[in-house]
Length: 375
Image (cartoon, rainbow, N blue to C red; front, top):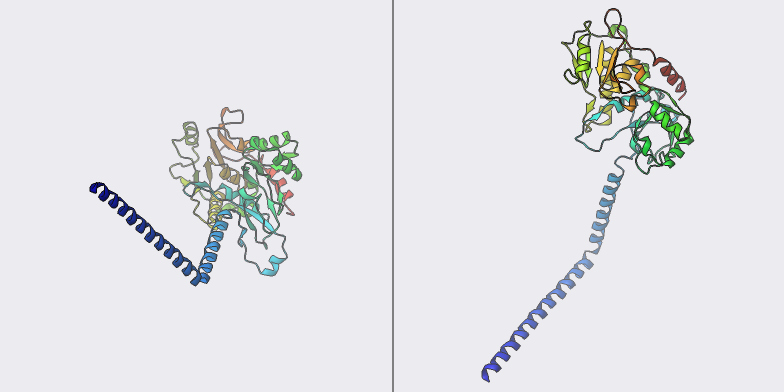
């Protein structure tokens, strides 16, 4: 009997101890809560300031991330006084951004923009507009030459109301995947001058007036041509090397008028970490080299087409025919598959063994210059 009583008392004692511990914890908790609210009351003003600053920081960070590619960037290509600039119509010029910072990208985009820049008044500064974000541009209203390569993003209704587009030398990379609303909006700007016949044909299928205009880079002689006495003996290989295409190698080595033991190797690849100014300067340096070369052999369309304008003999090497070349292929000396996907060597050689360019591009080049005379 005594044992039972002792056990009962022991259990009750344990219960009381647990209850006391709980009360103490609860008391401490209430004390902590009171202390916290007391601190908030004392430092209320400081806490509000910190929260406002934190909110401001988050807002700025969010704005920067979301507007990384849509900001209204601009810079001077020409140093002119403010009065001259104020009297100008506003013009845009396309620039390009690449999302993978390690990826090597093509300077041909900036060569396209340099071709467009030739037609802007020299006393104006262009507003720089990202090609892939033209539908989001909300800056000053500008006239913008829409030349070059375009891949239209899914869901895009296309172009900002703040842009007055001039569609010349226009190429669509993904015409078969575009929504009907895109074509409907594009039809408001017809007649569209297309860089290639494939783009022209796709637009016509959708009821849009379009024509083949050729590429604006065939007019780069306006700002980048060299004098005859500046011509060098440089033989340039742009993104092509011996051993990469045996059929081309064999023909090139048969050109006895040239010394292929001394070759200048050039690439159109560059790292995206370069600033836009650095990219434009790199494109200009390449054009200067092409303008003075004796011969250029390349796999790059936007090395080959500028060479036509710069009167530099050029051969385009292409293992496989690319729809980007449609319509333009006939202008060039070529080694590779033609529009019928058959291999051919189509290179003009004079009686001394030197390569020379066809003049078939010239009428299109003249028409482009005429169309943009009063741009």
